[in-house]
Image 1 (cartoon, rainbow, N blue to C red):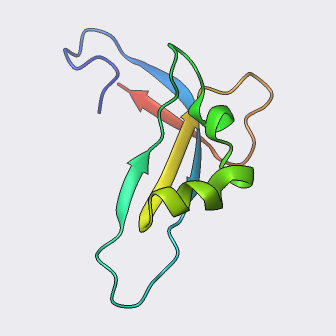
Image 2 (image 1 turned 90 degrees about the horizontal axis):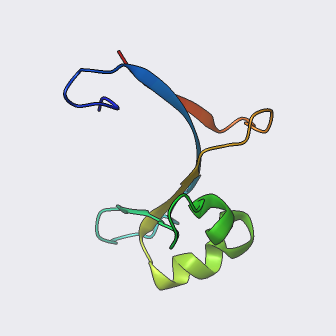
Length: 88
């Protein structure tokens, strides 16, 4: 999806994405996806929800969901999970 749907401006944004796969359960309904959104403007959901430490608890609240949290990373702190999303 372009950053500017009208096509008037091109650009790109770096986006840090964390994913916690749902545990596979035999005879369970199809997996679903939950994007975790933090409360304030510009607030990073990856930092707010901390999937590494709180992921199992969050999965107990949303069983069968793949959990996804994002943030715009600080320069120099991109890590392996940074993805470049661009519009031309």
